[in-house]
Image (tube, rainbow, N blue to C red; front, side):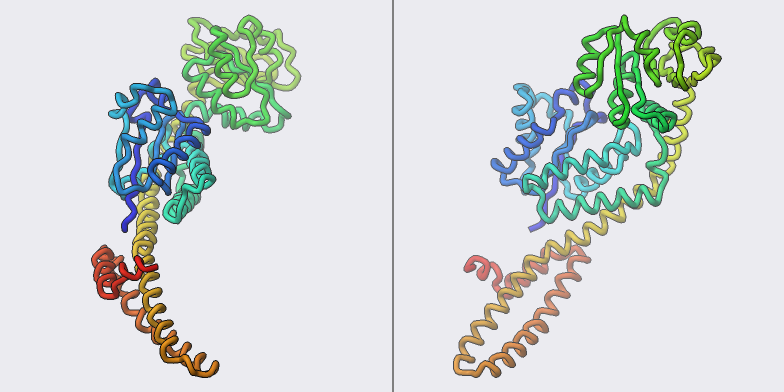
Length: 422
């Protein structure tokens, strides 16, 4: 029977952030839902991917279970009206479209920032969660390893993953490069609006840094710090925190500069101080660079770098899509072989059963040597008899006629009857 691989997806393309936050699943919720799917629907080959931009479920079943799965998500999240969110989900009930979507998501083609390097690790974690619960069978194992191999090809053969293509990640890349010789660089993030929050979340990719955040509304800073494991500085104490920091990232909205040359000139700068201004209008005076040891980058410098990287990625998309298509075709070649493998095995079992019965019938009084000779001859005959139907089955796979050929061979050798007697 052909595998019916399906998917449902809620993403930044189909739902606003308020809805995505409601549906988003943590590791414990994913674990719970996977177990429920296994118990209620005997699902195997199931993958749940949940990030800040998407929540998706991939599964293998004869029936479309998308409504039931969405209800389970609602139950897990305590949403009594989850059915009202059905329209935010995109449903993939066609085998190839579900597989293609998984490839595109895994490579970063569907990300908010095209080519997002984080998605690959998120997909690996989702696969690991499924494997840990024995919810990844031969189909999903092969599919995911094909996905990972495809990702490797894209990194090696294209510029799709080159450079930082988002403002926040380009900021992190800049900080990382300029603090590479500093032991546990101290970073202060001022302001956790939309851009500041995004930068804070990306700072987890600077594991050796000591990050502090401050915000006019302290509750927001505390909530974000608790999520990311950072320290909060009361806003009224941020000037002292600025003096201590090696890196200051300012994402604060003011009509006039918040960090001035006069303020920075009072700091005792031991070696250097990196200032990054992500505010529009600018919150750091450009003249701060006149102070010895101060290096300033503004949003235009960083955005220019990110835009250049993004243009490279966009120009690589046609080649990325070619590689994905090649991988999908290779996977479908394996999938077709998998379709006929059970029939080939049943045919081998059927012929072996006949061989053993006839050996028992006619070789009762033979010597051990005679038995070995006849056993060898009949095995060889069986292999030659098997050769033609096996070749025909594999040829039928390439012509997309495997199901018809399986039916013919099953009827010819009465394989269903043999299966039921086992």
